[in-house]
Length: 151
Image (cartoon, rainbow, N blue to C red):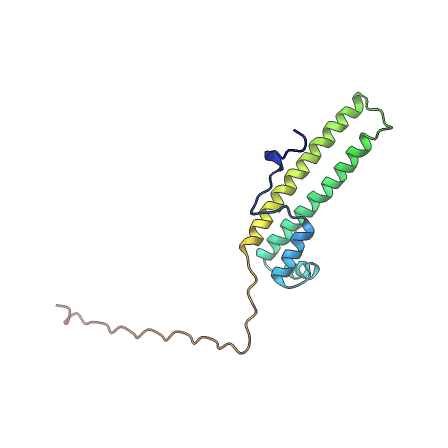
């Protein structure tokens, strides 16, 4: 019914809808550097959490661009001055399918990267005034028992 929220209108109470711009900001906050610097840094490092987050951000941004493209294509196809014939119907159906796929990818990527980011926290940099903990003392060596004492 129009005007009444249904099950599809409910968003996750734990993970709000985030855009790639929101995700980029959260990655920058987590690592304390601009995204471009982080991308350059990640290229010189072995794969790790940063490269995974950047990859998820890239996939989310691509899905958002795909949504924009397919939405614009559909808007052109259903322009009020344009006639919709049998040939255009197949294009409408294909565009609608592709738009739905892009939305599904965006939702999956946004949910995944938000959950990962939610589980991470920025660790404060160690201060020079903090004393470094002393290494544990080595264990005392065990004296070997001779066979005579064990009888």
